Length: 261
Image (cartoon, rainbow, N blue to C red; front, top):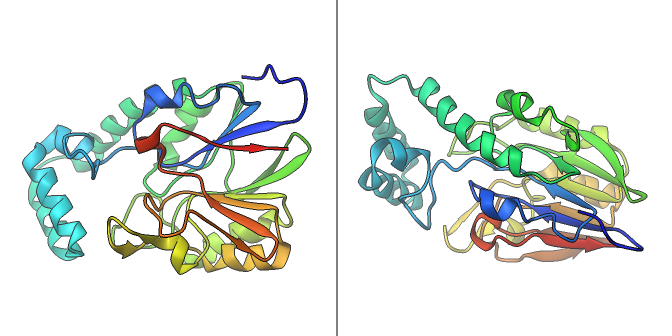
């Protein structure tokens, strides 16, 4: 990365979900890459043949899981999952599959990269792959890039999907509070605003954060950047003086969102 004579350009991605090839190019032409999480691909809702679940149990099982979850029949989806995993070492098989995905994706990160966790990530595995020069992992922490202060909040809040990195409301709010005033507020999930949380394809509201919304109103960062909602009703809106931006579903588009100053 680099090569720019003046100013700063940062590329931002979220919801990578296994798109390692595009991730390796995501920093081209930028001074830094920011990744807002969800590296792991458990199941591709657009292509049910991709992901950990179809790799282990086949496309027909993946089709059934998508059908149940899309219909919001979460208890039935969990019951079906228990049938699939019966007699198997679920934790070990998932961890092995995630390790294989992480090995490729962390190797693809350009230098420098600043990353935080998504709700489907497994933070406990990150140190094995993130301990290298040029990669900084932040969660409830700040960093200066090109003279601007960026604050990062990783993970999601409790949801019916019961994804791996969901933290309780109080813990999440404490991470947001720890940032203080920043120029750019970076999170995986959006602030709790209906237009930013509603997924038009899944036809459901994803979980947003009231703590993020309160921090935006209180501290007025220039930008609030996030992902999580793959096909949002609104991709961006202003809240006071803050430009709120869903940076896009990188797994599908392969294109980063650019911020310049």
